Length: 124
Image (tube, rainbow, N blue to C red):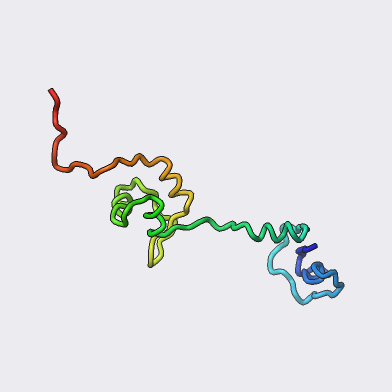
């Protein structure tokens, strides 16, 4: 059984985990304890395996996911149809995967290039 406890209590976290009765009154938590929890060891390790960090995509991953070139991604961004990146770093803009997935689900792709500079022919 693995447990967590306030470092300022009479028993340290190491003492709770190992069952030892050593005290460490010299180590006090610099924050208030909000919650304590005891879980089975296998549950604890399973919880550690689940990431709570969102999936992040750079330009290369976004273009592969959408099936477009870097130039087309740039055009989509400039048209304001594509969601803004969550972060901008020196190397690349970064998007959260779920945001890109939402865009892709609602994106109405039109095959081919749009005709520019011509009026649509009239049929009489």
